[in-house]
Image (tube, rainbow, N blue to C red; front, side, top):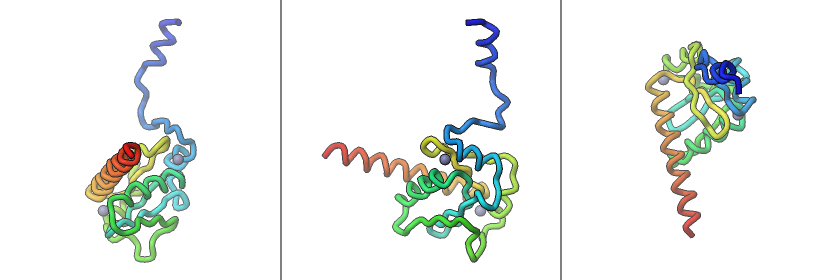
Length: 139
Ligand SMILES: [Zn+2]
Ligand SMILES: [Zn+2]
């Protein structure tokens, strides 16, 4: 292989666009709008999420493993709005942290404290899912 070509390939990317394997998530992340934002209702939380409907649904079902209640997904702003002013502002941010969900990526449009809370729930849900799968396999 041509050395110059290799260099080009390994050169670090200008990293404001990471490629997401799921094209639908990628498209949603590139053009946040009212129609691509979903709202996750989990316990007392209302968290705006950005991603394709499949992966947002996958995110919901993982988070649901951490609650006794149902986690619900709305495709429109909930009637009561979002209580937290920080979360209401979060959608205007340019840099959206994204979480890998399966082959997709979901952005959490929340203030920092709610963002870390929902990410914690998601990770706990993933662990619960893994131990569930593990216990099924040992039977
Ligand atoms: Zn997706
Ligand atoms: Zn908040």
